[in-house]
Image 1: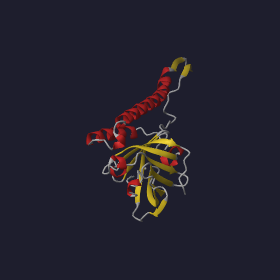
Image 2: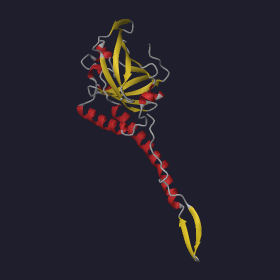
Image 3: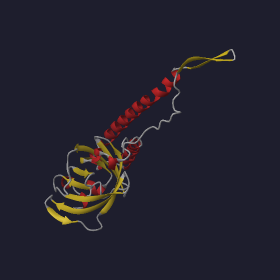
Image 4: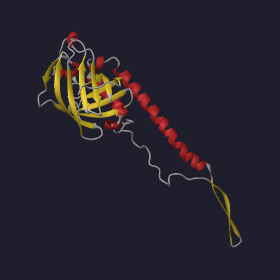
Length: 242
């Protein structure tokens, strides 16, 4: 039972605001007013049309706007794709493939390139889709499956916590060790059976977690066993027990 509580962390594998552009002094052609150069009684007229630099500059806000629109559209497509799948428990292999394809499109426009340096990661997240059968508990009768699963993460303390809701309320806490700006190693320390009875985790209770998409209300992660996890933010002020 405790094993089923090792939510996104226990099965996860290899994890932000980046500079989208690097502007050099040669990027723009600035306008010049018409000048007359007199040399040996010869007049040469030099001018640079002002519309050139306006064209160059206007490209950037349009690009950013389109990227934001694309991200919102993909996010909505993803949420609609998982809406009827009971967090993944009712997903067919075809459903899983479609969700994964949409998730990869969203990951490609991830606005938070270094999630472990972002405050957006902190808080309590609710799992809304996964391909992990152990977390979904699909081998149990439906009445004995956890109705909701949550994950708390605090970057400042490098702590994480996975929590089940009714009927068992199991929990597990873990220490995180950054491997890079997107990925952490996970070492579980204590399970809490029924949320009350502490049990020390075995030394083998380890994993990795890669955060592949992070925004204010949505997070995607991938595990070392190839599982996909999609979570929504429910409480950004939540603190994991130390």
